[in-house]
Length: 305
Ligand code: MN
Image 1 (cartoon, protein in one colour):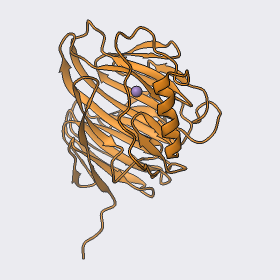
Image 2 (tube, helix red, strand yellow):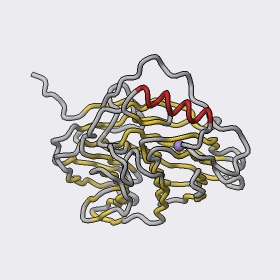
Image 3 (cartoon, helix red, strand yellow):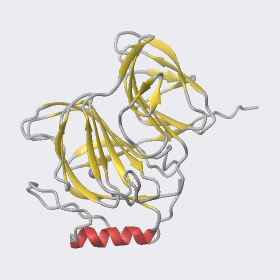
């Protein structure tokens, strides 16, 4: 008899962002749209940018989500339609809340040359009009410091939520977890305690690691449905992983282009409003190029988890 595995392996796909920056996308996939409210996960780098050759993402709109950027190495300038301009540096988080509508650019500073390694995730916003909810106000927050501790040879950085007595200051509207885990000096084995109400995902960002007997690699996200109470993680020296989790999201969503919505008509409306620049998504000042335009809307998009 074969024993069914508690986890599922999700293949990342390669994609291009900006003009020519190749990234690996872990969410959404056909198999798995969301993990908790996490509905998008791009692994950017590690790579090296030449001067003038970095990321350049022209103005584009967002609705119904928060963009969450965790910088591991490198620099990136965020500029948005609320007037925020913020360079994010290593060990920092940028959190942009779209609510009903915002637009922004993400550009490597013109004089920057050097390493680039980051993850960008999106967090689906829950129903409602309050701050943090999907029809609420837009906002931008920069978090220059993230709580960190070293234990059993492992460095933990709690990006979102609560883990091992550390609490992240990052404000989100649903029960969510994000932890950056590294073994900087030597190999180690640790047991990660999990909340059984949460579903979880684990992504290898660098090096070698094994979780519950499964060898990890950078092309696969490992997913556990709710009910799991711990994970046994072995990290080789230099290994680096990202743990995400959350309570299964309240409703099926459509994730299409830069929009997270509940129904097809909301996509059509958002696209119409972005194309006509009617003010819903505002304007990003100081960008020398044209805004991004969406691809053709597919015939019928179906909301799913
Ligand atoms: Mn964006």
